[in-house]
Structures are given as structure tokens and as C-alpha cells.
Length: 142
Image (tube, rainbow, N blue to C red; front, side, top):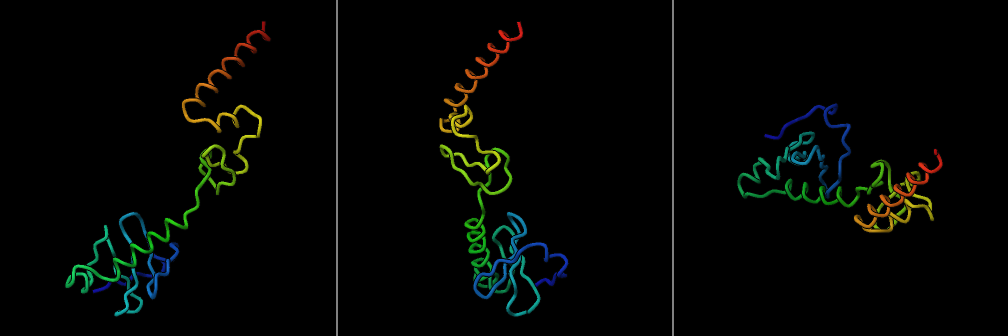
């Protein structure tokens, strides 16, 4: 039998429309799919296993197909975020690294040049820059 959930338990999660079904992706292993035979009820799909009569009888059901399609739609619609702050959509790609507008290094700066380099090159470049700055500061403070 399909499980009926109060609307307050499912409303914060945005439903994904897949054909005639609404799919709620709760977390990586749990999803809810609307029931056609019982309006207002949802079938839980846990770890890509459904216990509806169709899945029990045939070993596969439309709920499983709907969850897989909803997961793919969700993956495609996910926006990449800034690699520096991890917040907000990225707006600038520098040397394969994604930055938001406030985290993007200014052109001509050491951080901008480092972003254009590969990982180890950037580390050596920034270490050398910091060493030069430290030497300069030591000379200035004497």
C-alpha cells in the first residue's frame, strides 16, 4: 500500500515533474514518487528499490524510471559554485577554475597568474612571491 504523507513533510522540497509523475528527491538514497492508483499518496523509493505491486511482480516499475530521470534532471540543473568561497553561482573561469564575481582575482595580480597555472606550479609561484614579500618586509623593518 502506498504511504500518505502530510503536506507539511514534503512541501519544503521542490517536486520534479517527470511525465505524469511528481518526484521528490529527499536525499541521495530516498525519493518519493506520486501514486497513480491512490491520488495523494507517494511511493517511497529507497536506494533504487521500490516496493509497489508493479516492482514486486515484475522487478521493475515506473517509479524507478521516474526517480532515475529526476536525478539526471537534478544533476543537469545544478549550478556550479565558486571554487574559492563555495557560495553562489560562478561567473568567471580562469585557467579551469571557477570564481564568483567577488572572489575572482584581478587581472595582472599574482593570484590571477597563479589561477592560470596548474596546481603545483601555482604553489611554487605563490611560495616564491610570499618569500620575496617577507624579504622585502624584513628589509623595510630594519
